[in-house]
Amino acid sequence: MSQYTADTIFLCIAIIDFGGIFICIGIGLYLAYAKMEMMLSHLKNCPAIMIRVFLIYTGPWGRLYVLGLIMGLMVIPGGFLRDGGASAEDLKNFPASLKYKLAFLLKTIWGLLVVMCGGAAYATFGRG
Image (cartoon, rainbow, N blue to C red; front, side, top):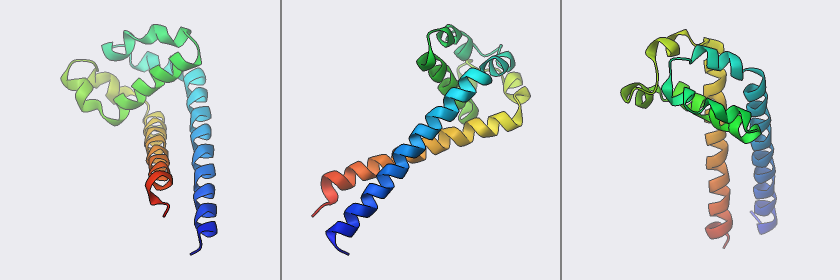
């Protein structure tokens, strides 16, 4: 495979990765603005979320931060349950379809981040 072909493949993967990240940010902003009140109403007994709820009034970054906390709570609840930051009853009553969407979004973001780090490693060390 020629260097030109490898660079073209690398460029296509990078463009798709950046596009995917922007799409995930857009989906996250949609969820943060359209579904935040409903998510917070289901997590009203979770101190880890409730002590940071004021951040939703600081703009899009604050809403994304709180959404990230909620996504982390949905994907890895064990740490929150162990230290008393979450309520098992609230997690059980959280809507399953929204829990799936949040978990899928978080795993997609992590996957795109891994691809981006792999692309950076290729750009730094892989070119011969």
